[in-house]
Length: 99
Image (cartoon, rainbow, N blue to C red; front, top):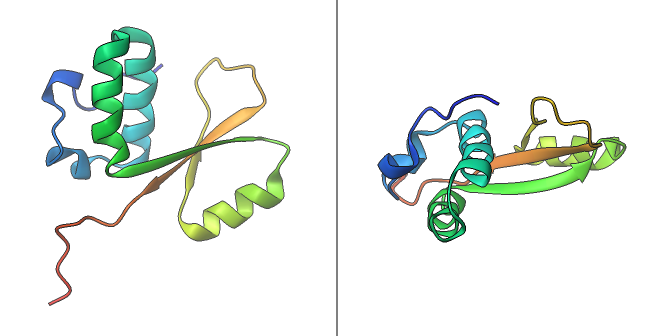
C-alpha cells in the first residue's frame, strides 16, 4: 500500500481539494488500516466532502465504462485478491467561481 500524500492529522476541509483521485484513494486505504474508528469517521467526512467513492465488481465492465464517462477513476488495492475495484470521483469545488 502506498503512503498517502498527506498525513491524516494534516487533512482539513480546505486542503482536501488539493488531492487527486489517486491520492484520495491511497488516503482512504491508509486510514482504514492505520487509524482508530473514531478518527477514521472524522477523516472520511472530510474526504467525502470532496470525493465520492463507489466499489464495483471487476466483472461489471458496463458499469465501469458508464462511471468513467461521468468522471470516475478506478483503483485496486495493492495485493488485493478480491474482484472489486473502487471508483473515485472528485466533486466540483464549492469555491470555484465561474466569473
